[in-house]
Image 1 (tube, one colour):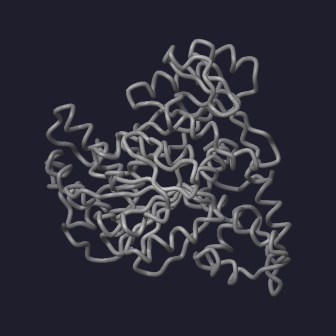
Image 2 (cartoon, helix red, strand yellow):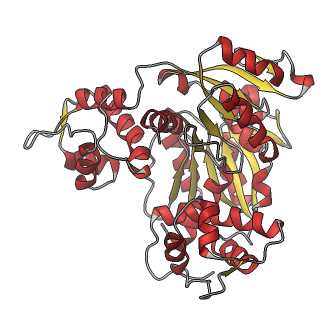
Image 3 (cartoon, helix red, strand yellow):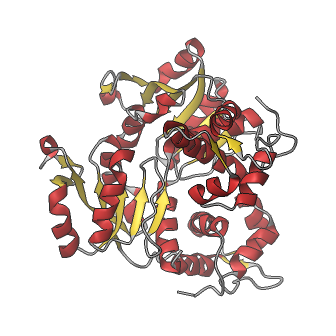
Length: 211
Length: 211
């Protein structure tokens, strides 16, 4: 992976997967090269933004030629660590947890949900797609025996801190947090929040502003 | 609602629901006033960021006093349009659509999922939480008879454009898009994307960068 020279802004980090998706679509359409201008029209960001973003990683474009689509696609894939497999456990086997466990698109990008856990004894051993629901007390052993990188929290806010701590205490350093609370778990733990209620509020607010 | 003076940046729009959540927690703890410094520590943004953000809406703070928590909470609630009820239909009754239809936190913020639709005849009339799954051809009539503001797309990418167009043709102007594709539906339609695969990629990438 190309090591960036300085801290990358959150905005750039959030755009990279989007670059990757658009470039993947271009590869699928057989397009071999694209100018930053055309890519900018497609992605609805400015051409200078694209040049700036990609410069963080050494820049891939050539003056007068533009970008080679498939090599840019592959490079961004490498930057995103997509060559590697990432194992995930889901905590919480409610509707959302089960939906995550059965979501088909993750695997294509190397993200494998390999376990789903709950505290509710009634759910023990039930199917969640291809997985059997396990009890939380089996989690430490499961993490130890499998190479678990990511813990997804599909649980209520009141349980989130405790469950996240169990993950961290057992060596998981990446938390995908669907609970409606901010988690602060130390500098070596990365937390990515997905707050669906806030997303709806944002939609509604943008619509009211006409944006 | 306070009308802002100029176009609000996407970053500010995305922070407002977070202000609202933190202020709600402060209200619940009985805290009556807070300095921008203390709010900034709590929210992990800078104090000057907070002052700038809130200035978009006329500013609520008083020099030397800080912010009155409950009035700031109520004002931001008004800005976010949370006094009003917002009706939502979900398109797609797969795992994700069903999880959305049964998600409990939306209602507290005035978001009501009142219908769920699919194309699969096998699902017709089945329960999705408190709702019965309806067929897509019933959607236009349903939108007409109910005051539907928001359409949630919990469907594959290949169907997303067509389904979004049905919503728009029937007067829905807010699309909550879980399909992995950008939708461009005209200037009077607001689209908020939730791309779960990209969110996972972002988590993994941030962890690799140590951020």
